[in-house]
Amino acid sequence: MKFIALAMLVMLATSQEFVEFYSAFQNSDVAQLDGWTIQGSLSKAQTDNFFTCSGASIFGGPKAFGKGAIVTKQFQLPPHFQIKIQVEVWKFDAWDTQRQFFYLDNYLWETMWTGSDGTKRCATPAGGNVNSFSVDQTITHNHAALFIAFTSSADKTADKMSWGFRNLKLSYLPCPTECGTCLGPDAIVCQMWVPVSSSWIKNVDADGWSAKGSQTSIKTSTCAGVPIIGGPGNFGNNVSIQKIFDKLVPHYRIKVIAQFWKIDNWDNDNAVLSIDNQEKWKQNVAQVEDKEYFICDKISPGGVDGTEKIINVNFETPHNYGAALVKWTSTIKKSSKQASWGIRQFQLYVAQCSSNCATCTGPSVEDCTACVSPYVLLDPEDGNGSGCVLKGDWVEFTSEFQGAGWTANPDWKVADGKNGPDFTSQCGEFKFFGGFDKTGKDAKITRKFNLPPHKRIRIAFEAWKIDNWNGEDYFVKVDGLNVWQRTFGFGDPGLADICGGDGFENYAIVDFVIGHETPTLDLLISTTIGKSNDNASFALKGFKLYYEKPDACATLYTECNYTGKSFNMCEDLPNFQLAKYPSKIKSIQVPAGAKVILFDEMDYNGKTIEYTENQKCIEEYQYKFLQKNQQSYVLTANN
Image (cartoon, rainbow, N blue to C red):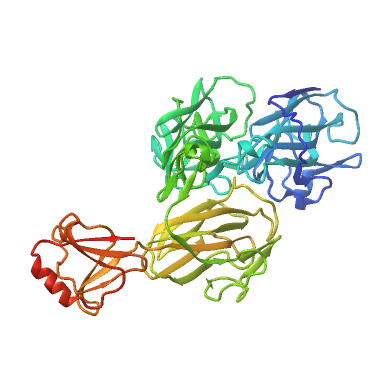
């Protein structure tokens, strides 16, 4: 018996504990077959998929798995950086250097069996030897989805040459809770990555991608029960797929995690990934390579019996544009029936700049080179620190959902929620408005605010995602306009499973400033969740609303008692006529702390009249003033 490891094994020292996410086949309960795809089994009866040898129950064996048999299962995982597999592999009867192997995505483990391996541990149809081996391997892995495939190169039916396995356990090492993707346990090097989009992890459909070239539509195929975009008969020579990702948060790098499938007979061709029409990643696949076995069936007519190679892509590059065009293609020259390719589990991340930063060279506040409006970049040389600060005269209008002892203002409304009228919930040590079994599919949280005079508003709160989201959006609207949006799903940082159902909780900081002058503000908070409330929900906590005071403006009227035509003067005005304002002024409202000065000559020259309080009627004085001077009038309103 010869063992061959065809992947780089990970032997990292770490204090973290592996989290077991799957365990099966300690017995012969057919319920364990749920989610497994079985192809090529000798028997169609589910009970024949198990075989007992010396008291051990094996999935497979002489009644099931021989020539052409393959069994597969898929999993979705939270952010992680290692996978551990523990399993016993078994062979039965007369093998002659054929191989038994399994895939964990692109990792391949295999062993070569001979007829002399093992002993006659139990009765088999062919009366041959039986042998088993315990596998315990840890591999590098950070994709959001995982598939496992067991198969062999057996060339006889199961009653003459068979295989199986038992005691399968799968575990992962989680990323730090701050990180949506990682390559190790250090949060410092991964917490800047935020998810942009994910495709083909759970559902395999077009998802906004388009195809060009000899194939103009997105098609799918299935290889051993594993669905992929493209594949045999679909993506061959002169085919590319692409998608534009816009409205990216300010960032300085972009990361692509995906799985590229090479299918059938490539001949020193390249798999290619381009970003913004620039080739950023490629991998050559030779005519004959290791780590290749038959996974996909030959298509008819015209197909070939070629082998498959699975390539895990984990690529990043500098990028700071507001949108990204991602494109996949290959350089194969053959038709899609002879050589093809496909994609699984695509994920896109960006390394974001610090809070309120528009452009940057890195993740810290010191790396910020420009701020989003209306924030202003501090100059560290001035001794006032670094980063972006908000200038202006801001007033906190309301602060709600802070701490644990609050009661929700009745002005907060929930439409299409569940289990009301109390829409508060507890999540670990946190108290939420909304949440598990309260606000999920179709739910909308609304509030109407009546505000004093203002020119801008700022809203800040924690937007919480609860349980199993799959690329859905959490969004905020003000007066019907979408002002903030964040996609949650596979690859999100996960604090932990601290409440709700079977899923991880996470949150994003909402903090935006928009121009707003109307006296009322209609706020709407909702999501695109498509699941029931007990499977995915949303909530908020720590809500604050600020408004910026308007500029100190004097209001001038053409008639007494603040009537007639009016206009606001918020800044110095050197010439009434050029500004097309009337020169006849009979009443003035002066804001507190401001002074209105009238000049009888342009450009702030000549005699002046000063007002520091409202003037209900200045007709007599204004008349004399106008008679004395027939020039244009000027005004300045200085605080």
